[in-house]
Amino acid sequence: MRLVTYQSERGPRLAAVVADGFVDLNDADASLPCSLKELLHRGSGILRTVGHAAEIGKAFDPLTVRLLPPVPDPQKVICVGLNYADHARESGAEPPTEPVLFNKFPSALVADGAPIVLPPISQEVDYEAELVVVIGRAGHCIRQVDAMHHVAGYTIGNDVSARDWQLRKPGRQWLLGKTFDTFAPVGPAMVTADEVDPGALQVQFRRNGETLQNSNTREFIFKLDKLIAYISRVCTLQPGDLIFTGTPPGVGFARKPPIFLQPGDVCEVEIEGLGVLTNPVVSQKP
Image (cartoon, rainbow, N blue to C red; front, side, top):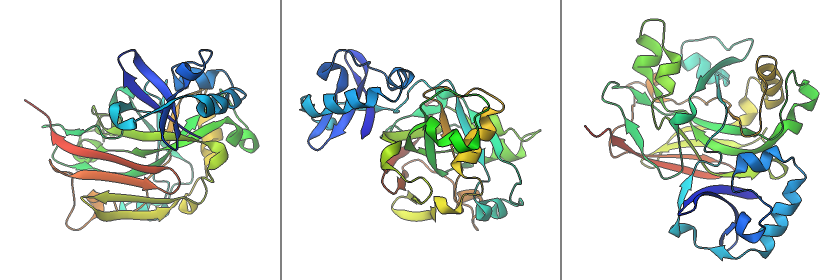
């Protein structure tokens, strides 16, 4: 099942993607919430009710509404660095022996179709195609063997990065370089975990139609169960939390000459079975 969040005159709404459009789940069944995060807090059993609502609800044209990130308001946006060996090497680093973690603020999130805004204080804005995990069940100190039971589904992300801030500011400002407004495009939908094999997904990034990244999640250094268990030793994972799982080789700053995003570019991240996340690139208005 594919679930999306969209903006309506009534505020953010939750819909299921069906063959002939979107079905607003709360309109189809008033017992269902309008928020994906709230839906996840109710437990996995509610997905049966969601499936029934999607079957009986009236579909509408997706082109009549504006998408929001599948989870517009996660408590946490956690990111994994250097999770493909070839990307670690192109970045001048050895493949890590433990997961490398950082975060983005939720204020960096934007949806499919929304612009990536280039800030005037960075000249080196880069792209990173990533599989994003959506947590569905709370947990602390999760056992690795149980970790995948805490996953609600998957979506697509672009870990947009200001390399001049991330790598050359005093102290190497990873947080600031990663969390400018609009630097976390996510979407278009969350695909439920029962429909996805996350260990064998093709991941591609295209800039203006040219493929710059093309790899597979088989190449992860740390598989998802390891990442979830590791993260949960530090902080309690909550329903709706997002985990960006790392990017494959081919990023812009490692190319010769480097490729950085420019106004007018169109970014596409495609992940097998999940769809395509598309975002135009614009300059920040004065």
